[in-house]
Length: 216
Length: 301
Image (cartoon, rainbow over the protein chains, first blue to last red):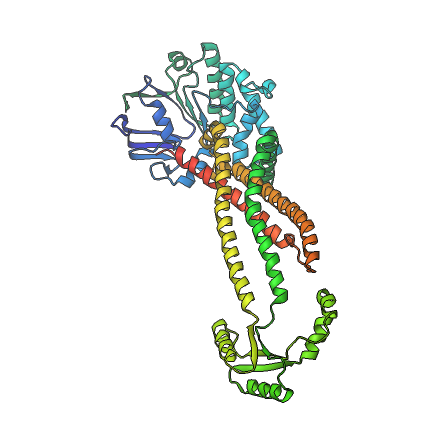
């Protein structure tokens, strides 16, 4: 599903964010990405979503090489991924429901079908009662859950989560991990970056540990 | 089907956005309308004047007036001589009596003519040259001028040529004005859209991150530019229409003094439709440039 071969990412100025990364994540697998902040976890996730391109090596996502992917092919690639951001990236000029509708509008789904799906996604993360609320009025944990609802509403086969439990207390974090666990059970491939030890012990899974841009 | 619904959704959102800031919308539409009305107004005036020359321009001809008091035999000999000239296609003779009668019939001068005790007009020939090219006609006129017994030789198309030249100049001026103001329209839209993009930066970023194509991101802005341009075009049409109504009222009095029927034509439906299409297109173009520039700026490298 996701395959890295000798991947390097160097930023202008010489900072080497990733060094000689090679690994593979199979379909339906759930994998943790761990390491200190600055170890390159976010950069790695950005490469998979083609937000950035590797300097050398190949990153294969569902058979497509991110290094050489055409600009026009990137939107279609991203529509097949669910992205969950550490800073949520929610839009505060519209309701929670409209936030979840956005990927469906982008995907060109029929409106009535979209509304049904959006409500199902909100229900899944326990926010159906708050669908009319502006995201700014939601708590940190709720915002994170809304971000998850938006990521899963198009039923992507791969979910990438960047520190989804980073700023949450353990109750909220467990709640979110339960949600992820349920996606894993229906066959979604998950790559979750985290530095929360608690999560790793309660929900064990394969771990990719990054140290200064290299795998340990 | 779903694409049509998507377009309708974007169109609705665009109209809402326009209505949400009525003052800004009105101001922009007015600026575009005024900018467009200048070349369009110039075009309408040119077209009106052109239709005037269309009524008057006959095939170019040279009028030859024979000295008053020349005998009838002499006059007909001149006619034969004219007919034999290789440069002349045909010749029409207008006896002085006929010319006088025509003059008496023409309305505006009848009162003046009525007072005349005798016919002051000379016999005249109207000469139709074979080639109507301006320089050839001028040389023919110069040649005829040297003939004896001719009082006056007049190239009747000269003023038409002069008017044509003036109209050509006017057309060029309108074209330059239209070009410059079209550019202004694009710039106005570019700037409006740029300000909108600044307030919707987050939305564009998020949409892009979750897989929106450039077309999807551009669409609302393109609709906005298009709609704004279209409204500006309608404003220009109304401005020109109202101006022509006002001017025509004044012209009606002026024309009556000269017994002329001259009036400014209003913009034809075809021209008006072209104006709307053009202004909508320019608005679309300005928006396209603006969004493309932004998309290019946020493109990761």
